Image (cartoon, rainbow, N blue to C red; front, side, top):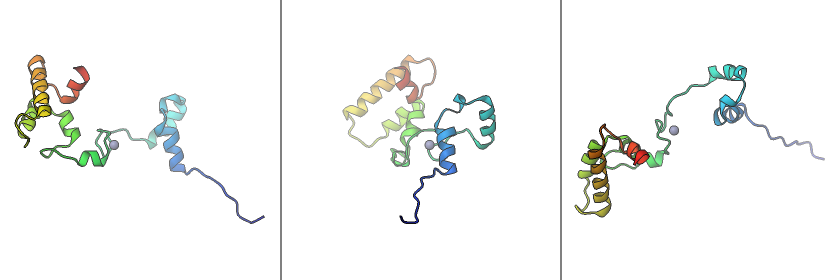
Length: 121
Ligand SMILES: [Zn+2]
């Protein structure tokens, strides 16, 4: 037999991520949660700022705004951005979007973002 030995070993970072970040920390005992807590920081991701979209998706921009910007934009502002798009005036998709957003704008008693509309309408 040769002298080599093949071992698979999960690194400490991979193990920590798998056990305490990818999994639900709340499923562990209070003692474990307290022990792990100092090593965790909760907050929006540095890369996507909480949009959960990859860099390629976020790099696509319309009028300087990416999909995350447009989704969280107030309807008034979104309508303004859409109205400036350089497309044929009666492009059906744009026209439909404008019509729907205008209806939402008229029917709502408070300021809505596009994300709210997708959630509630
Ligand atoms: Zn992210």
